[in-house]
Image (cartoon, rainbow, N blue to C red):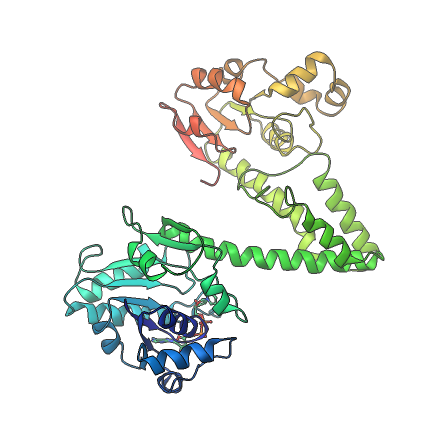
Length: 438
Ligand SMILES: NC(=O)c1ccc[n+]([C@@H]2O[C@H](COP(=O)([O-])OP(=O)(O)OC[C@H]3O[C@@H](n4cnc5c(N)ncnc54)[C@H](O)[C@@H]3O)[C@@H](O)[C@H]2O)c1
């Protein structure tokens, strides 16, 4: 396929070399004449393992050339990859100046270009950029409509400098952000020789995944470095501890605990984070990263309280009181904190939690309930329907599968704030549904 690559920095140069090696005809474009001159001479504008040979071979074989002219590049290719820089602006927000310039230029060139053209965003851009910014600009400058005169795909880049040529050929997966009904066939064809799964998602999701990935990598590094410093101050071999920590692929290095939802709690996580912070403090090791975990968790409870308060005063039915489903453990439960916050602000509250109800009846957790939350015990209802009686707003913290039919049957015109993401409730007719973050 004939592909123009706009922006031949780290990402663009690797795309040029690797796509040419895959047999495509590539035109590299940049506003920096020295980079264009280097590429045109068969030399790499960046330092990267294996890239010199790929670019020399590409130019030598005639499959790779370079120009400063976007007009030339767009006119003579079917696909344009955008890989210009998106640096931080002075206030920390991303600068999309180069993206805007390139989108306007491509749009202008598309105006007079016959035939189909696909624009592919490889630069890292915030969620919403495709629909809110680049597609409208392409439409405005080309005078054509998206899906008719041109097609736009988002294709975030996951390569790492230092191993980017290897990463290009073995990505974790290929992610394509596309309009509804578009399966990204153009990119599937371009990457036919590249390994790994292909995922197609709405533009916003694809754009967001790149930010999530980089944020998570930074979080992992901060966790490892700060955690390592605390362990070292305690005389622990931090690398040995982290090696063993990573051996647990069930809970530690896994998708566990990576589903967005409500706050955590329980008898272990808050207590053990506090203990680790106290140890760090005693050893004079700064731990600002771990120090923000509990405040971050509390902010979720506060955000939920604000969402309830925004709906005005009404009787609230809270489903879920223990810190998670399937247990009667109420210690440091975020639902207890939320319930107390609501009571403190004068809300009428009814609560349903099957496990806590069983514990109350059998007496297994009675001492704790009577000592710590007698004010909440009085509000417990034995069945979902009883909790819903007279309630205007339902907060769905958690409710087990066995109680869902009774809940669905009793829901009738209620407003539901779903903290758990229960699909059958979301799809239930006759309620006003709001998800926490979906
Ligand atoms: N560097 C990485 O490892 C990496 C990995 C994944 C994603 N990304 C993302 O990819 C994008 C590019 O990153 P990079 O590191 O290659 O940037 P870079 O700064 O190395 O290269 C960007 C290039 O775009 C050129 N450019 C700017 N305006 C232009 C215009 N109007 N027309 C043509 N060319 C123009 C610049 O001259 C430069 O050569 C960024 O959004 C970045 O966040 C980078």
